[in-house]
Image (cartoon, rainbow, N blue to C red):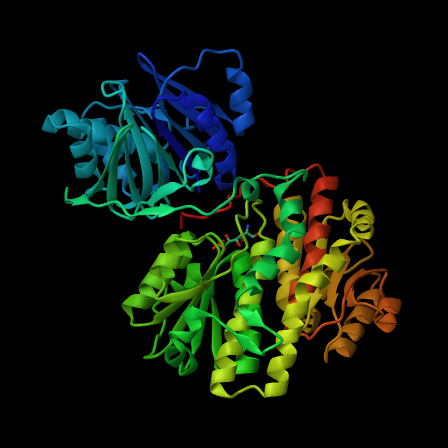
Length: 611
Ligand code: M6R
């Protein structure tokens, strides 16, 4: 949460930082701010999105070859101009931006107040900044040393970037628990929460680790740990294309990402799945096959959409591999004292690879001796690095806050992992194995077919946009898809929606049903379909409106529904990768109809790096 950008070098910093902040806005967009050094420290900040700040600065002289910028997801203090970052220290000389939470800030604040400090904002950031400044003054040390001393005394998570009026070439940065990337250019350096702000300028990057301190000048990069020992930076080459982080003609990233799914699922299968020869190649599984196939239990930890993928994976692993599976919200798992037995394998699922709860959950499980298998999208991210083994989803950058293509790629990867383990364990027949490889192979083309018929979904969205509540129902593999459909609608259109197992509806939610309630059934054809049809009748009998995702040519199910959207036939194990697509589009078009900013829904951020 919160996006940070920094630049030091021969170019004008403002346009680089502004563009970088636009790319990082998925991380938070409550307020925006930029600090520039140019014969003095200047800070510009404003509540709202990056474009709000940009328009207030139009026509101003914004010079400076060094600067830092921030896009905020508010934690301490409401989103307003004062709480926006960067903050200025009491002396006026230092400016700092921060991503994370300083948990002991109240105590630090009290101590500083006793020493005569007063604060303009309600943020923990301003407290940390003045704490650093106080140490610098008291200890008569340089800024780097003051930052090190301060960070050894704070509790919490942070990425900070600091500039000093008296040292107009240097940015000091540090990380614990939130991502930080350094881009190395020719006589210049870039800093960012991810690599997107630096893509035009360099392909050489360093991913900073926790408890590392960075000192960058145009011609110098120094990396140290908090014990003041120098570390050799590990320089990596970026392989993301600029086009991957641009909208390419689509109105919103979310729509682009929904439409990319035939390609992203294909990219995920490519080089791994060979349906013709009946093989799956996955190094992360092969090298650890004994561990995986002998696991007495799999525990899946994730949050949000990734957790929904985990629920579907539970059904797949239990059915194909005959291994008991538990699916845990990472945020709950980390705060209890879970029983982890010898040999248990944790599967951590995360698009960003930075979700704080998932990261801490796996660290805790590691301490208890578990083996961690990561299913992650962002290469080199914290969860990927903290895992013992894993498989990347290769969906490319996902920028829309609502997760779409990452979900279907997660399902593709998890299905392949399950199939591979099942084959090794002999819990699947050859015939079923080959059939499922073929089914997986056909998914990209079937998703393309669904995407050809978006007009019907757009029209449906127009009819449904005024509903106050929605119920999403499904059985078996379709139940987690119902949860995912409800989550998509909630987050981007602000309409209340609940997902439920279709049969569970009778134990409470049916009380909500009346002629104003749209009930969305995920009702693709499987062994449960007749039972689901009975549930539809139960809704209709109470005058609810039945809208269903059904299998093409299933006229019987269609005949019960007020509205239906169809998807090509497939095996139930792979069907969620199809049935979720119309639900993504329905949520998207309802959001658009309601005038919502679907890429940046209120209160949300793409990467949840606070607890
Ligand atoms: O990056 P992660 O997959 O770990 O993120 C988990 C959730 O924060 C994420 O899926 C969130 O629920 C999305 N906004 C859902 O669309």
